[in-house]
Image 1 (tube, rainbow, N blue to C red):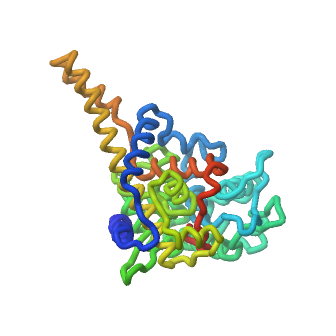
Image 2: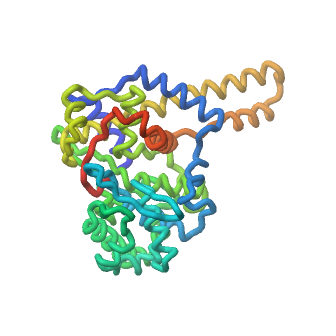
Image 3: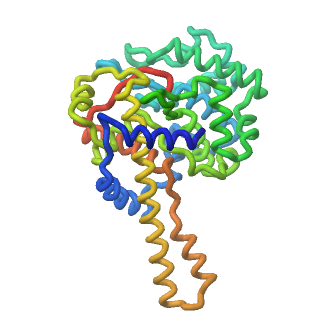
Amino acid sequence: MGGNVLNSCEKVSSSSTHVSLNKESIKKVAEGISLKLIEDEFSLENWGKHELHPSTPCEDDVDWLFVIDTLNFSFWAEDDAQYAIQYKDRTWTGYWSLVAAINRAIEEGVDMRDPRVYSNLTLEEFNHIFRSSTKHPVPMLETRHEVLTTVGKTLVNRFDGSFKNCIKLANQSAQKLLDLVVDSFPCFCDKSTYNDEEVWILKRVQILVADLWGCFKGASWGQFDDIDSITMFADYRVPQSLVFLGMMEYDDFLLELLKKGTLLKNGSPEEIEIRANSVWCVELLRREVLKILHDHINVIVLVFCAYFWTGYSFMYIILQQGDVTCNSIILDFYLWDMAKDEKETMKDVPIHHTRCIYY
């Protein structure tokens, strides 16, 4: 199914009406990102550096992540009606308001890692967990409650009450886990139809796999032999970064639509084009970055060989040191953080808005 994401998104990109990709800009951006990766300015380690993410993960964090990514959708504010959470002497919005609310509930004695607990929450109890520090409630409250209680019941009835059992069944395969989650939990089945063909996006289930990988640094519960098969996670913020950097472009019709703040329906041609082109754009970016990193490694090896003609064992060590991890997950994390950190700089690039459970 993961392969279907790339294949279907490439098809959409090749026939899009309103969105296009700028391959020259992709190459230029790849050079800058490659340098940051080589100089270790950004890596998988960044995931655990945020104060609300687990810094020293344990088994319980597997089920914590499942809840987070089950509810990780539609936190954008409508007409400045910003939902927010007050936690640890700070105000949190967007995705971080979700993480803050779950962490706060656990500290208050509601174990949101246990599906036997959250599958039985009443709407009133759920509303209290997500109580806002502003006058604006969490978007889609009733839908979130239904989604969480439903997946909780499935975990209890089919997987002995823990997402860890799903991971065990996947046998360290990201694609097997992806398929298992989509088949078992319909709220993760993020697909649409474009030109009479299915388009798979699968944002939340892919970010679930990526978060496991990031949280556990590619080991234990986050070890997947095919992790590089995961694509980027098509949401609101990353497309904004892609447009800001010149890698993705909107035509005048779509640009005007977004500037007006028009709500795009989930599954509309415009929305599918934005999301599918984002996936394919990051894939092209990944390929360019890998080319640059490969050339970087070769330069290291060639320089070494010039001085140590017979030092094969040492050459291997240097090759390993020069090897830098890069996949679509790393690139997505980088682009998403950039969109948040450079929010003011990027304010003139409109974000598309869609209300749905998929992102």
